Image 1: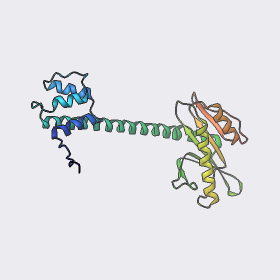
Image 2 (image 1 turned 90 degrees about the vertical axis):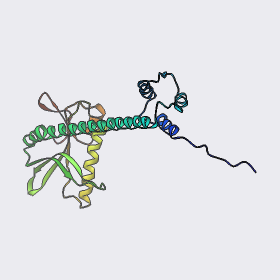
Image 3 (image 1 turned 45 degrees about the vertical axis):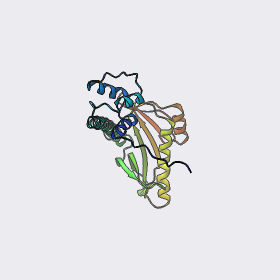
Image 4 (image 1 turned 180 degrees about the horizontal axis):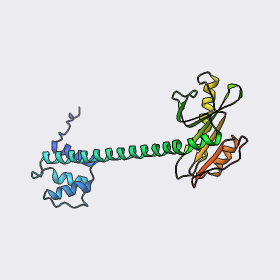
Length: 235
């Protein structure tokens, strides 16, 4: 019969030092700098194991001081994370605001004049199928036809520096097809007969090829004017 196994008791000091060495918010360099401020001239070349061994019985550095150091570093890390989140949120809001301004102040008034439209809505909602959430339509143009019928045009807008990619056109196609499917399933009372893309930047060649395949009109807003970039059957 073998000898009974006894787990070695870990001291509070060891727990704290292990917590520091495994922490994502504490770098070894920062800890050594803090120790130097406490009067211990430790070298930056020391390993975590060497530091832990050295500090194990150092009475000048109390457990309370080490705990305070850990909490301070955790607060600093949390503050950095919150600051990053705030900046990301602000950047996203700024991007959305710029997009909405472009849609409301530039594209919508131009579309009203260009198509002599009866209705031009920005950030409109259209039910899709089988998606659960409705699609947000940047600009929804409605033109009255004969016998009380209406022509609906879907306009996707991009106010950005990078060029329009094939996937941007593909996403527009998917939105239009989703709304059409909802209409066919009697979940929406209209569908888009025409699609347009309006951008402040250039279009990649493969994006234009896909747009022409689906008869999607591509405009570029440049030097204060709208310019049709491709050829479509309906303009």
